[in-house]
Image (cartoon, rainbow, N blue to C red; front, side):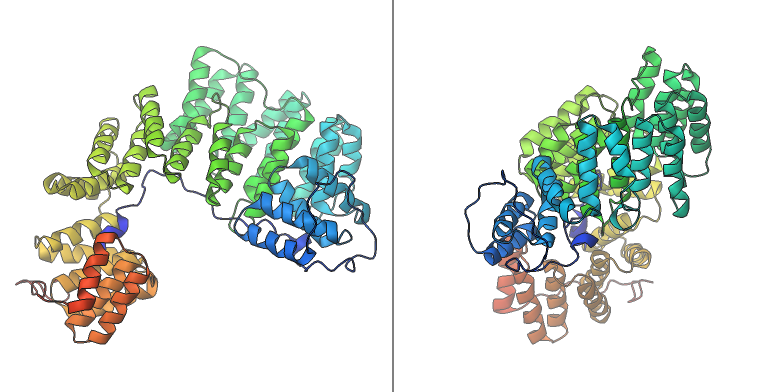
Length: 596
């Protein structure tokens, strides 16, 4: 189904999956209905300055809070649970849930109050203890924070973060031996060698052990593991600050060579080196160091099943270092994934324009503006970015993708033309020609569209999306039928579980009058994408042609249930009224059911 790919945004940055703030947290694995005070034998009184919220049924507030949480309105969820907590002040699990929600929305004032109440009952409650430790550091009590770190749990939710908290709080006391002992706790965990080395280098640098930091950074960058920009950035700025500019430059250039699409990250560093400017140290206090640690744990947890925890650690990082660019980026990304778009936009915009991540943040801002239907603002931002960097193609690719998704195909072609003019014809740019080909085809310029699809295949000869779109288009146009059918069959061979491509092959057989094969593939496509209106419509058509008229009408009605495009609604209504009339062209001479 060629149309299944028309709105694919080839230039978009991948977005994160949704989070549920409580469900993955072991401390709150049980979600009891408020019990009227019987849950905890130990009394926990509400804080004197707790929010003044009208009283109502504890059970009703709990249900309302749970509903708000499911709808990702965490501030409202926390407010409702606060109401329930006023009615059931002894419910420890309810306090924990409310604490986590307040922490997740970044309300540290209220989260701190709740953490103290929880700690009074359960001193080993992990995240509340960690939040209180963060507040100790912020108040300047480094000794108290170091002492508190010694009592943090080393299992459960904090098993990955406690080694870093101990290490950095000991570093804050200039206890190098204690800091190293804290990091050594990672030796009991598999897969944490690089994280341990990274923070060892940061701590050595913070404590003034230049030789130690240098040895550790060299060990990291000489590792066979793939380098990430965060490590390169920290190591490179270390070399720059210690008059080893050639090493820094070589490291930046190596990363750019290995990651050619990351020029927006690397170029500011290379420009700084060329200008002879010296960057500031990334860690000048124990707060800075612990913020880096909290972000690294957030990044580690930024996965499907633990993204709730990822957000909490990002909030801890931002409490310690409010302008931490990567923590802001992560928090914005999570908000965007949850469709809290206004919050996401504000958070992306909070990233320092001087940061290496500001360019990527601006691309994401434009994406969020588009999702908010503020298309003209998004287009204006992308055009401004393209003007600022005359060699950068990404803003124009993003602009083309956005306009194409909005069916503004002629404007999309113009944007893609500008991007093509800025790029060399490399294999990794196949998607740009594919995207422009779609926009051209939908604009009615088939010769140029066909040329772009063919060029995309020259760059990536076995690319299933291009094979599918071009092969399907040729079949619809009754051109190159033998070759076209083989192309779509090859696309299915490469992606047998892609419902859209399987549908394309089924519909191609339908167009050629080969109904048994069409039925086989369209039924398979329905198994893969049962709620796609177009596939249901296609299957209805082939059922009608094979005399299964009742099943055909059933599939057409299903298609209407799944909100097809307005023009398709009229066509399907007409089929439900009168059925199908003229059949598509019969199988062309020289084309067999197998495509041979």
